[in-house]
Length: 85
Image 1 (spheres, helix red, strand yellow):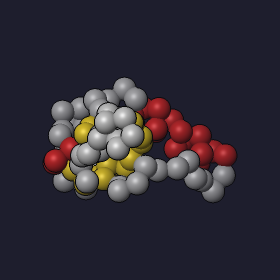
Image 2 (spheres, one colour):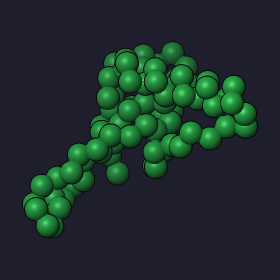
Image 3 (cartoon, rainbow, N blue to C red):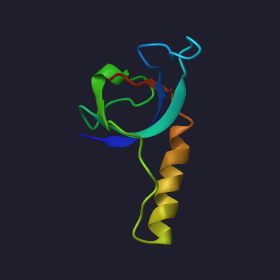
Protein backbone atom coordinates (compact mmCIF):
# COMPACT_ATOMS: atom_id res chain seq x y z
CA UNK A 1 0.00 0.00 0.00
CA UNK A 2 1.39 3.39 -0.99
CA UNK A 3 0.93 6.68 0.80
CA UNK A 4 1.69 10.37 0.52
CA UNK A 5 0.57 13.72 1.84
CA UNK A 6 -2.55 15.26 0.34
CA UNK A 7 -4.55 18.43 0.79
CA UNK A 8 -8.05 17.64 2.02
CA UNK A 9 -11.07 19.93 1.99
CA UNK A 10 -13.07 19.94 5.21
CA UNK A 11 -16.70 21.05 5.24
CA UNK A 12 -18.78 20.39 8.35
CA UNK A 13 -22.12 18.61 7.97
CA UNK A 14 -23.95 21.29 9.93
CA UNK A 15 -23.69 25.05 9.51
CA UNK A 16 -22.20 27.23 12.23
CA UNK A 17 -24.88 28.10 14.80
CA UNK A 18 -23.75 31.74 14.98
CA UNK A 19 -23.98 32.76 11.31
CA UNK A 20 -25.56 29.75 9.59
CA UNK A 21 -22.62 29.32 7.20
CA UNK A 22 -20.44 26.28 6.73
CA UNK A 23 -16.81 27.08 7.37
CA UNK A 24 -14.73 25.27 4.75
CA UNK A 25 -11.05 24.74 5.54
CA UNK A 26 -8.10 22.82 4.10
CA UNK A 27 -5.41 20.71 5.75
CA UNK A 28 -2.67 18.24 4.90
CA UNK A 29 -3.27 14.59 5.79
CA UNK A 30 -1.39 11.36 5.25
CA UNK A 31 -3.34 9.39 2.64
CA UNK A 32 -2.98 5.64 2.18
CA UNK A 33 -3.85 3.99 -1.15
CA UNK A 34 -5.28 0.52 -1.63
CA UNK A 35 -2.38 -0.42 -3.93
CA UNK A 36 1.08 0.90 -4.67
CA UNK A 37 0.02 1.46 -8.27
CA UNK A 38 -2.93 3.76 -7.44
CA UNK A 39 -2.97 6.94 -9.53
CA UNK A 40 -2.88 9.64 -6.87
CA UNK A 41 -3.95 12.29 -9.39
CA UNK A 42 -7.28 10.61 -10.18
CA UNK A 43 -8.11 8.59 -7.07
CA UNK A 44 -11.18 9.61 -5.08
CA UNK A 45 -11.04 9.99 -1.30
CA UNK A 46 -13.53 7.11 -1.00
CA UNK A 47 -10.85 4.82 -2.46
CA UNK A 48 -8.33 5.75 0.22
CA UNK A 49 -7.77 5.77 3.94
CA UNK A 50 -6.39 8.87 5.62
CA UNK A 51 -5.45 10.25 9.00
CA UNK A 52 -8.37 11.53 11.02
CA UNK A 53 -6.44 14.64 12.05
CA UNK A 54 -4.21 16.82 9.87
CA UNK A 55 -0.50 16.11 10.24
CA UNK A 56 2.15 18.30 11.84
CA UNK A 57 5.72 18.79 10.67
CA UNK A 58 7.76 16.61 13.02
CA UNK A 59 11.19 15.15 12.31
CA UNK A 60 14.31 13.73 13.94
CA UNK A 61 16.58 16.29 12.29
CA UNK A 62 16.57 19.21 9.86
CA UNK A 63 17.23 17.04 6.80
CA UNK A 64 14.23 14.86 7.59
CA UNK A 65 12.14 17.97 8.23
CA UNK A 66 13.16 19.31 4.81
CA UNK A 67 12.05 16.02 3.21
CA UNK A 68 8.66 16.15 5.01
CA UNK A 69 8.11 19.76 3.93
CA UNK A 70 9.03 18.95 0.32
CA UNK A 71 6.53 16.09 0.32
CA UNK A 72 3.85 18.38 1.77
CA UNK A 73 4.58 21.03 -0.86
CA UNK A 74 4.18 18.38 -3.58
CA UNK A 75 0.65 17.78 -2.23
CA UNK A 76 -0.29 21.30 -3.34
CA UNK A 77 0.15 20.25 -6.98
CA UNK A 78 -2.32 17.33 -6.75
CA UNK A 79 -6.10 17.44 -6.82
CA UNK A 80 -7.73 18.21 -3.48
CA UNK A 81 -9.55 15.34 -1.79
CA UNK A 82 -12.82 15.70 0.12
CA UNK A 83 -12.53 14.81 3.81
CA UNK A 84 -15.40 12.64 5.05
CA UNK A 85 -15.93 11.86 8.71
